[in-house]
Image 1 (cartoon, one colour):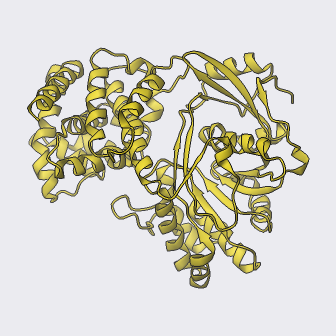
Image 2: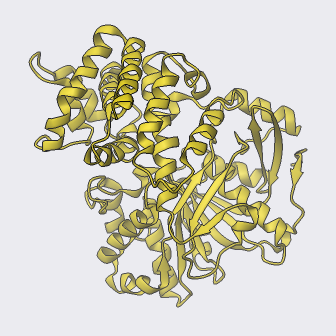
Length: 485
């Protein structure tokens, strides 16, 4: 299949070897890591790195579509000032475990030149307890993988299988690279994988301590799920129907902890940053970009808004968003150029060519809110700083659950929350019940007891006066608080 793109690399695909296996071949991976890898290959054709793609759940036909398109696809990179297309040629293979089994996967895991396993499976794919970061041994997929380590269902089980394969065949170790939006994602991944290995094969777990690394990363590029409109837009630009193509913003950033045991591509040639400590960059991105996205998704949905670009220019919502961002800013490393980052984020959010739906962003919010908003809120509270925007968001989340629970929330806590709302008694605090059921607080947490009256106050304002009026109150209150500091 031929695509007519503005940018196309020229390295020899015949010389590509599978040196990276990626789990979770979603839109973000195709529009981010695969782009960096493709550019890097073109700039260093004597050291080519191919990526084999694993679809774990089989919910889409992406593996077959990639094979049908000879492992190539297009990325439309767009900003408010224009767009350009890029052909990506770095993929060497693709498989869908749910429908095709483990044959190709086992072949890739056993290749001597394999150096990296990377993954994008979202927060819930790590199967850890949010409060402790430890592997949840009661998670259904982990329970299955403990009994069936050769046919794992989880990404964690699949990585454990890969490490066992390397050990059994006396091959070199590997680096396992998380590309998901989580603080210290490498540490989270390490805890999960090592926790499973210790149960499945302690001998391999001991070997992995010195032969497997788990670098942390910070990834940043807005790559929404494809819509029919974006699909047709891409087709018109590249001259053919691309079932694997994606549309993303022109901006991209990748900060990687330089901790690899078996080599890596020189991704810095394509603009990535290799650093010794990713944490400050992770926190800035998670709290400002991702935290803002969650705020827009929950509050904007309550207001009937559909997309980020629509929500960020709303006259009541934008001032409240800026209030949140500048509050979150105080929890970050002051050595970073945070004001410049905030300004750039607003420009990115306003990009009318990116159709980033609030409904998509709101998915799995019970997993996202603790990391993106509650963690900085607790830090700010210790610093005696204002936390009104975060308290407002928690109240808005309660209202969001109340409004959409019966429609089926796209959230791991959906069953619990949908049963809770209709069963509430007249004298019960809906805020208390929903926030505890969401996993945000323990019922006897003294911090929660301290915060609950303020959360209930914001909930009552939203309930009685409407979201727009409550947002105006938030912006006004925060301005007054800022003036008093």
